[in-house]
Length: 281
Image 1 (cartoon, helix red, strand yellow):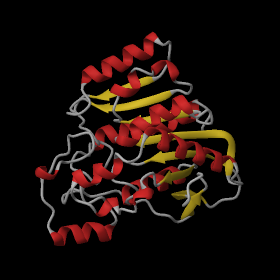
Image 2 (cartoon, one colour):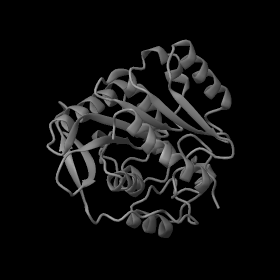
Image 3 (spheres, helix red, strand yellow):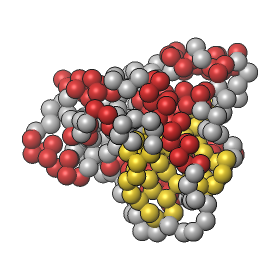
C-alpha cells in the first residue's frame, strides 16, 4: 500500500504506475498520481440530482469550465464552491460535489487549471503536475473564485446570500485566501491547506473558516498549525482549527492510501454544521 503523507500527493520516486494500471485509473476517472490500488473509493449516486459541466464567464478568452451537482428539486439552495487538489477535476472531486448536492447544496467545482490544456488527472509525474499548477497565480485563482461567486448569484437555483467554499490540499489554502478577498463568501472549510502564507494575513479574514488538519501530515507541521492559531487569536478571529492526531495529509480522500475513515466520518458532519451555523444552509 502506498501512503500519501506529502502536502500534494506522492513524488515520482514514491511509486510507479504501470501503463495497465494507469489506463484503468484513467478510465475510472481518478487522479493517477495519487490513487491507491488498495483503495475502495466512495461512489455517490446522481439520481435525484442534476450533474453537468457548465462554463463561467471570467474575462478570459475561453470561459472557466466547472462541474456542477445540485438537487433536481425545484427551489433555491445554498451553494458551496469546491476547490480541487493539484490533480484538477477528477472523479473524487465530482463525488464530493454529489455528496454536497445530496445534502441539499448546489456544488460548483471550477477547473482552475484549464488554461494549460493539460489533462492533469491522467498525469502520473508530480513534477509535470506542479509545473501546470504553478502557472496559476494567486491573483488568477482569486479572480476565478470571484467570477464563480458572481455567476452563482445569477443562477435561479441559488439561494441568495448563501455561498460557502471548501477545498482540499492546494484548494485548502485557496479557501483561507477566498475568505479574505471575496465578500460573497459567507464561510469556508479548509482541508489540510498550507498555512505559512495565509498565517501572515490572518487579520484580512472577512468570513469564518473551519480548518481540518492531520497530526501526521509531513508537509504541514503542528508548528504551522500553532502559528496559524496564534495569528488568528492575535487578529481577534473566531476561526477554528481541528487536528486529528493520527490522520495524515489527505485523510478525507478515500481514493488514497492516506484515507482515514474515522477522522473523515467525524469531520464531514462538522463541515455541514459549520456551514449551516454561518448562514450557508
